[in-house]
Image (cartoon, rainbow, N blue to C red; front, side, top):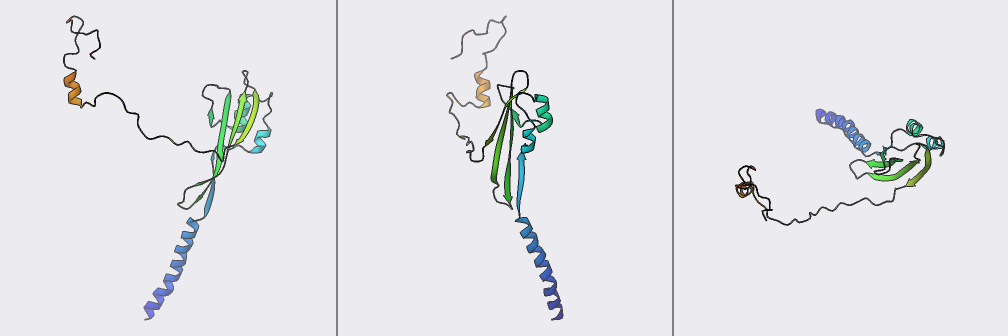
Length: 161
């Protein structure tokens, strides 16, 4: 009986430690994802005066640049809240657009709140193609005699269809 009581008293602190560990795992965590420049840094950029190199020194490398126009840089970042194993929740997402003129001087800065924008859903279906599904052996046998050298005269100029 004495050992049984001692085992129960030792199990209580262990149970408290396990509960504390589980509760600590449920604590919410807020992370910054992407490149989210501080608002103070943005005030250092002056349209008509700040150059592309100075923007890179102040804000760092952009998240991405425009595909067709190299004079546009995008800084994309946001805050995400995560609680244990649940799906992360987007708190906010901002897109800062820096436009440069042809000489590499800042022309315009825009800050957009993209928090409520809908995600792009990709279509998973495949486009059907016309033609036969041939095995490797059928392809090899079907190509016998189709190839030759110019000297042998077995090259065909017309399409096989």
